[in-house]
Amino acid sequence: MPDITTSLLVSVAVFAGAFVSGLSGFAFSAVAGAILLRVFQPLDAVPLMMACSIGVQATNLWALRRSIRWEGSLLLIVGGLIGVPIAVSLLQSTDTHLLRRGFGIIVALYAAYMLLRPTLVTAGEAVGRPWVALIGFGGGLVGGLTAMPGAIPTIWCDMRGMPKSEQRGLVQPFIAAMQVFAIVLLVGHQDLSSKVFVDLAISLPALFAGSVLGVIAFHRVNETVFRKTVLVLLLLSGISLI
Image (tube, rainbow, N blue to C red; front, side, top):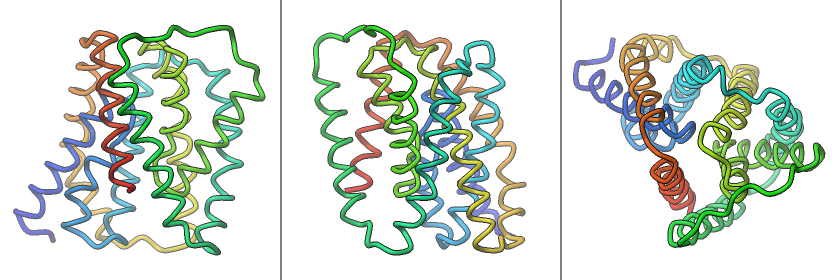
């Protein structure tokens, strides 16, 4: 059984990641991983983060169920399901370190520029279905390489100036589906240790509390604060890949 200090660190990491994800819709692993990857070995930390992140996404989906845009999300998901296996193949046959660093630089530069941009452009005309599926494909491909499936769809929504509820309603199901698909692939390639299930059980109270408070914060912040929060998280996520 984990000692008390380890249990507290795990709970703090999961609570922080769940709160940020409940508020913004993504970045659980980026926040929680900063602690969990120092407490556990990657073989234990990564499955735990994936399982916790799925729990957060389930809470988010339930809380935002009335805002979900299923048609657009399904197009993103179809594209993403094509992109993830390609990423897994690349991981097994190619050194993807340079790709991850390059993507991190692009995301960080975009976020930094958009934070400094004085005005927000509003969404233009509707985008065709093939383009939405292509965005999903890019999200799945990048997500498989960097564990950040929501980065490209989130950037795309920000570029179109989507309101926060519309953005979350479109991207949230996509992120959840990509994470479920990823953990299925992970379980198919390796056996999860019983330690992961023990740590997950310890994390559940912090996971629930962080998710609920994050969603409450999402409903209370205005559009400007939400957008800046998302861009700051994109900036930090991009820097973490560099």
